Length: 256
Image 1 (cartoon, rainbow, N blue to C red):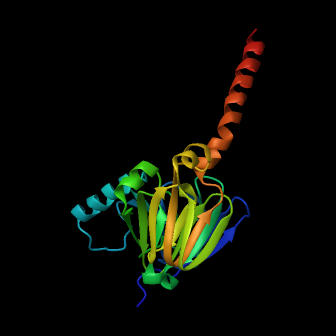
Image 2: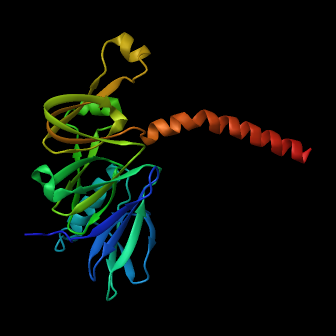
Image 3: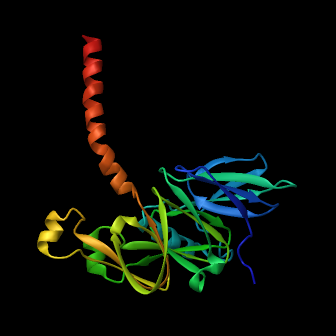
């Protein structure tokens, strides 16, 4: 039995991608607040507290769900977009930073669920349930800084996750993969995920790979990103400082 709305989509762009969702009458897609790029005139939108996967959910449950979303740094509200016209309608969503949009059919995922980094979810068919999950290794998750709080997507419809740079999809078969903590985008729930120290003291201090690495073990799919937002900010920061000095110099010369 299908619970999620069956939506059609098209990924547009290359290095900076968007997803365009095509909705039949009364079909709905849910998205993070502020993710919408454009929409047809017959698309209506409503901001709600919750993902709408459980229409009979009480106020207390909605508040609990909203509170858990605050832990991930996301808005406590989600926007629901519905086609109210006679024919098909389109609505498009873009990620908050340049990168790739990954379409994932939860019906084909193990256990019909997916674990996503806290800022990775973009949008999904109505009926998809969003919740949070915590890294099992509490201490390393806190010290590692990333990968402690994760999002869990559950359902049988299509969901869309965004990633920075190039996306690498890997299939683990009872294997172990060690990755930079910020480069893990999503993985199936059959994968065991933890954040562990990267090695000896010398390697941790002078290796250039950071103090911690994400370790993925088990059987299932894993999605990685080549340019997480953290690395992008670090790469651009020196140029931003130089540009600021140049700008102030130019302004100063002009005023003089």
